[in-house]
Length: 345
Picture 1 (cartoon, rainbow, N blue to C red):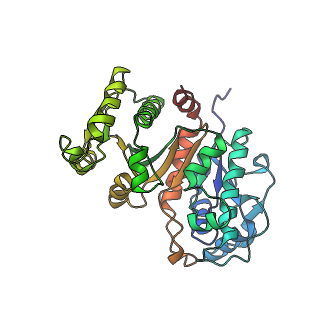
Picture 2: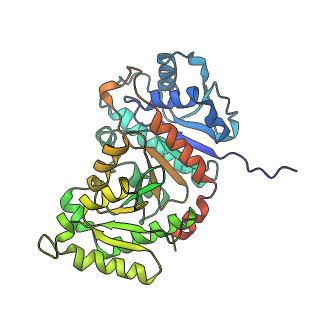
């Protein structure tokens, strides 16, 4: 008798249909048949946008098949199965900021979350949305991560960039620099350290070193350039160590990255604010990285790029990051319950 686990079902949200989301989704599902051996896929989005994208990359529109629920998918490598959310977006023009597309992008995510809460999908993979369009559409979230956290009712979560065996957590993300500094509180660092520890434990890497970046230049240079390291970050590190978390730091931002990338000294990093993590990560890994949200009850993995309106509809968008996101979500989804259980303790 076979004991092989069934393939996880992944909901792929289409993102903003005026951007490259439909193109990279179509390329992923039609040009990478090996993915069907790792997961079953259902797109949450818009049939018309996917038909247009499929035709642009050389396939017939008939490869796009509308379904009503994940139970209907057959996961054939020559098909895209999609749950239509809301009215057709056929009239939305590519490369334009459109409130209809922005609202729909948020609604795709909300539908995927509902399916996950109902146990109908095992994970969520997100194509990029446009924040301006989403706001115009009436959904005033800073980004995907905060919308997902709201839908699942969680407060302690982290945006995690990943490539290979490197995982980059963020204490703060889509806020102004002023707000980021204010949000770097003792409670936030306690929470983020617990999340990193829970995640590493679920990966079977409990006890591995976790490097923590300083907030200020030179990690404050002994309070010359700021006191947050000595008054907030270091005490939180010491509290984490007392709980058995292998924390190191605070380490200057311009030191921690060479140590991680060049010397491979650190595999788990904690960054204080968005660009401290994103700018170096994208400079090194480009579209060979993904974005994982840790702290949700199901795995969510996203591309680490935007909607790329400047190349939308030109068929030159690379699907590499979305393929990697799907692969990572498939790998993590069936064991994610352990991450969720540890993260909410």
